[in-house]
Every structure is written in structure tokens, then in C-alpha cells.
Length: 471
Image 1: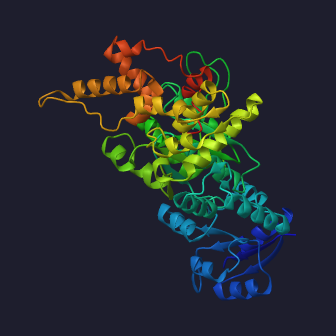
Image 2: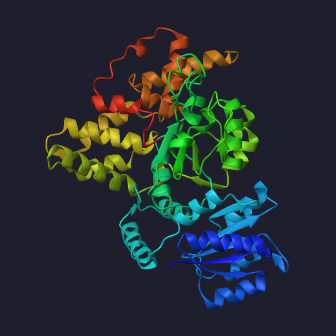
Image 3: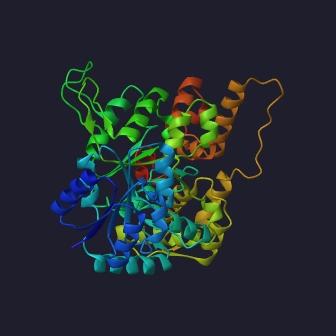
């Protein structure tokens, strides 16, 4: 049976926690101060430690260093003096979560349910993950480059905790795959993982989609609707393009993150939710704050554990590894055995990949369709040369309005990309939805009518899908 150590100087609190943890299948031991806790840890290594922040002989976080088996022992801080700073510090020191007094016993039970029951199985899984990582696989991510190994280290540390994660990186680098991997390696892995692209939902509907609504709460609300926070209860909610969320809705998101409760539109009843939030953006957060696209207080709440997803141009050998991976996928799907020629590999390695992993996959799919048995440089180089932005310039006379500069740059980039809007949006660093809004505002232009049929139909459809895994 898993064992829990309860460290609290309040007798009533200790007794209540003993009763709850025992009912959930734990053996228990108790301590009223740090010295007693150190003695109990030496006697019996705990699987979980519940530590009060304020103890008679010191701060509960001082005990963290005495717990040597941090890879198999989870720490939860209990405090009656909650603050964002306290929570962030506890999570950075290795706590998986924190509870505020009076303790929410429903949340405590949810936390207890995620403690692994079989440590031998956990050890075996850890060994398997280490071997897969050596081969370049880490969760659903793929790569052997040093920058990716560093990223894997950070993901491996933060995944088992309850820390909020902020993923930063260019469009197409694979932020959703990183979020999915964090979820898969967490104690919530058996619960839902729900990705939400905040830039792909209408501003008029996003509040309802995230928090839900009651029947009759607004015109067209003909039934009750459960939002993402309700549907993801117990699991992980991935909020992609967080800076595209309306600023007024960010206030409500901040409240959910701080209190764990929310209300559906049209209701005055608070609902509790146990959700881990992972957010992502391809903007610089500080620029987004200055532009009024991201609230400073929400940024501090999300930025508990920031992770930068490296662009493909920094990943060296991963280009070839990923290209072969995508080719293997296409071969398996179509029952073929096409191969990538050495000159094709060299061609891939010499390109700078502004669209990152998403762009690489699209190039490989196009080359797969156009090639017979061998994919060589001839199948790849023409499109790369035609769409490479390196060396091209746009002359803008001094005195041109910013709106006109914006318009000229967008149309020039579209021309550069042969009218392929998704590729243009990637190069411009904006969402596809934003690009379409700009083009609608600018009116007719020859590149708005450009035929994109040279790309496979599934690529064009996937580019509009709000769950694009390379966002």
C-alpha cells in the first residue's frame, strides 16, 4: 500500500487528513514539526508527503531537501497563507501541488487518486522511456538534437507536478505535441487532454466554449452546454494562442486558475474543476502585454514554468530524422516502400524551414505524391527555392502609412508563397484566421484567387483545423 506522511502542527487537521488518506487506501504516519518529520522519513520512505507551510520549528519548504527520493515521493504543500508567490516557489522546489486551508477535501481526494500504487511498474516505465529517448522518442515528440534533449529534461521534471506550463515558440514547432507529452507523462494521463485554439474560436463564442452556458442564457442557447473546463475535469486543458483570447475573458481565466471554480454563462452556481492548464503562444509575451493582448497578472500566473520549443533550424540532425519519420508514416498509410535519396537529405538539411516541423511534413507529403520510388533533390529543391524568403526584399518609401506597409508586406509574402495562405501566415508569424481577416479587409487581389490545388486536399483542410498539432 502507498504510504503518506502528514506534517502539520494542528491536531484536528492531522486527524482529518489521516481519516481521508486511510479511506483512500494509504498507510499513514504523522509529525507535528520538521524534526519529527525527518525522523518519520528515515523510518519509512513515503510515497506522498503533505506538509504544512508554517511549522513550530521552521518553514515546511525547508523539509524538501530532506526528501532524497524525489523521483518517487510526491510533495504537496498545505498553507493557510496562500499566495501566488508561495505556490510558485513550492512548485519550483519540487512540490506537485499545494492546498489551501480550509482544505478542499474533494481536491485532496482527486490528488490522492493520482498517486501511483505500484512503484515497480513505475520503475519499468521509467526504464522504457529512457531507452526510447536514446532513440529520439520522448512521449509523442521526436528529436535527438541537444536543444531537444534539454527540452526533454525540463518536460520530464515538470510533467509529474501540477505546475502551470507556458510553451513559447514559433508557429509549427510542435507546441501541442509538447503539451500532449506533458499530459502523457503526468499523473493525469488517464484523464482527458483537451486542446483549445483560442485564435480559432469566434470572440462571441469563446466564453461559452470554455466555461459553458445554461439553456436560454442567450439567443440560440437551446440547451445546456458544458465548457472545456468542465469536460477536462481531472485532466489537462491546453490553451493554444492564449494571446488571442479576448482581454475581458482573461480575467475570468485568471480567477479559475486561482480558485479552481467557475460559473457557466447564465448561472450563479459555482462549479469546481480540477484541471491542469498548459498555455502556449507564438508571440513574445512581453510584446503581447505592451500591445494589450495579454494581461500582466495572467502572464505571471501562467508563467510558473516556461518552456521554449526550439525552431527546426536549430535542431540540426532532427531534420533528417523527422523527414524519415514522415516518409515512414506515408509508406505505411499507402502500402508503399519509397525511399529518400542522399541528395534529397542534403537538400532538406540546407533549407532554413521558416514553417518548422509543420512545413517539413507538408514538403515531404508533396514530394511523396510527386515521386515514384525515390525522393531526390529534384522532387524537393524547386519548391524550396521558389518559396525561400532568404534574400528577397520589399522597398517601402519613407512616409508610407503603417497600414499600407502591413498590406504590402502581406501581399508580397503571399506572392512569395505562391498564394498558399497557410505558408504565408507561418512566415508572417500570424494565425491563419488573422491572415484571412486582413485579406477580407484589403479586398480583391490576384493572390486571393491563387489556386492551392497543388497541395494535397488533406493538407489544405488540416491547415484550417483548430487542433493542428504543429501549432
